[in-house]
Image 1 (spheres, rainbow, N blue to C red):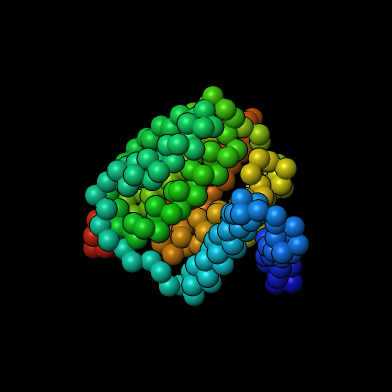
Image 2: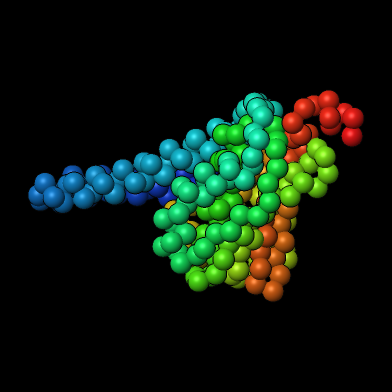
Length: 230
């Protein structure tokens, strides 16, 4: 808990310090409307980052209390993740990556929460994949009531001692990676929380330059009775 509190303080301190120094600079030195607009634009970005951190922390707090998942029937999980992939098209193109979706399943999930988890997985893969490679999103039915979703990419291998921690809040395997200052390290923690809300868990493997990160969700067949029969 002490380490967690220290992480929260650190993550909030950086944008707050930027906002304070920016405001001081604006009061002392802004000589024109254009300079003032530039400073305000920079501050707005930091405020947006703070808002995202607070919103994600609130979500994790609610998830730990077991609230949030409202399951409905989703006839095609592949169609659901395809909608998420469409949102990531520009980022994938900028990173010179292609995306392939494999598999499908009919499930009972909280569609909005699952889309958020898949979006976080795709965003993570996009940031860390090697340019010019393919990202693969796989959907697999492991047993009648368990479905697995993984995102695999080529890039740097995650060290074995880091793998167990990648779903921890604020953990970054490599803070030197591009855009590390813009991503506050809660994305995969949220994936883990969403998995737990669906009676599941997470998985992570990384070797020989291939990294596979995902989640599995339990009791997701079309009817609860069919799970009971299984």
